[in-house]
Length: 620
Image 1 (cartoon, rainbow, N blue to C red):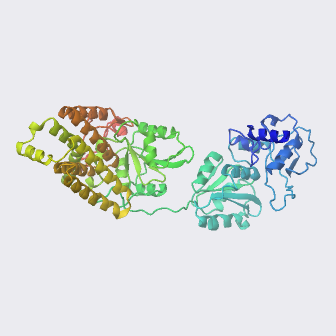
Image 2 (spheres, one colour; image 1 turned 180 degrees about the vertical axis):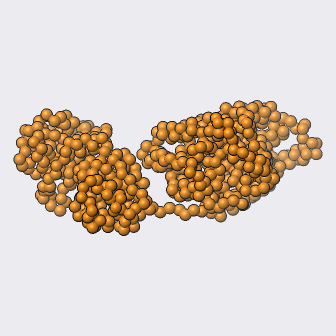
Image 3 (cartoon, rainbow, N blue to C red; image 1 turned 90 degrees about the horizontal axis):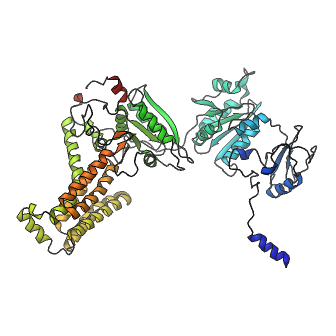
């Protein structure tokens, strides 16, 4: 009875975790440090401390671990949890133990007796995150970092270089091109005829110069730089006796082909859009800007997923302080998961509480190239078909790629139409509310009588009418986007017509309100930037509230508040309404387009290099 009670108490009593887990690794906050102190408690890791080996082996027997032990004379022995330690004194001075091999699953009594010598130098190199000379240590460390064999898409290919040197390749299955490995790496490395002229020296240099026929091969020593490259599809080669790894370019994963942009359609202009592949996007930019000063810098983003993003800019045009600021903000991101450019722009913007966008995104290579030529910095993110450019002004958000492809008269007309669309989308419902509720004397008498006649059957106040129709319009628009294919377009058009006609027939809203809401929606559709269009949609509800409460006075107060906020906004140090306010030296190409020969390529508020030297590009 006492045993049963004791067993129940032990079952519900908290017990701290053992320092030896399933993999045999000692619990430690530092991942790399735990690789060396395997199978020994934290209080037993001092070099001059005596250890009860029988207790450790009994515990390891339950875990199914193998041990590598080294005594003070340097003798090495590999044994499983139930094996005997020949030529080793259990009471002698010991050094940290290292797990080497897993048990034989077919016959648990079979013991691996492979012996190896690990120098203190290799241990110090691994502790510092560097490639060790001993290939067995490197292999165990790589398996530990990638959780092999649990992680089954990590491939470790062991072989002998020239039938003499032990080596292994590490790559991620599905991220690399198998043709590169099977035809241009393994056959050349395993053929001893390629190493007849090699006698002594650095074998890695010999392989790079004479053996491997791959266009890009680099040598690295730090595991913190090697492992991200492996995860990006590069193959790593480790050779026994070399404290460096050879990174062989072998990326070959599936990717989407180049297609026409889906969110920035133009009638006259290039029909190529960015894809989710970083290298493809950079090549699209290089095809447009053939300039030796076009700089591409790679930076990892995300503490855990570590996607790559590229900073692209013209070295002799972009402001050096702007480039430094962009790098600083990206490097200071402390976020575990950054999926694409949409998340990145939220993490680097100046003020996250401002309504208007502080960066500009585009999926058109020609537009991104124009941003680079103007002195902006373009950030290309891996896994996203949209690139972002900084800094940005309000007028960048109103421009489109098609503006410069057309004659200046047509481009100026289109821009004026967009500017009117912004004003209509933001102000018309609020002005209607103020006019009907507070300033009806401003309406012509015939029109006023017509409005009163149409509203006789409507049981709701004007504000309820407007809000109901605006919310219904937003629901139809969002539903049309989310419903796939042609059904979404049909839902957007037919749904709005049927809903408006049914609401008028039922006497819930007046016919003139349907016209007001339709004009407002069309005005919002002409805005080329999606983020700016979303901001205008939210601002519209603010003006409806101000017009309902205070009439035209409320609209003027709302405009004042909006102007103050936009004037105080900055995008990477550039005021949002530049060059309108503050006024700069050159303010061409804002709303009204000029002929191309009257325009300049780079605006002075971005071109810090030319601004400091006093030399500007001539008018074209």
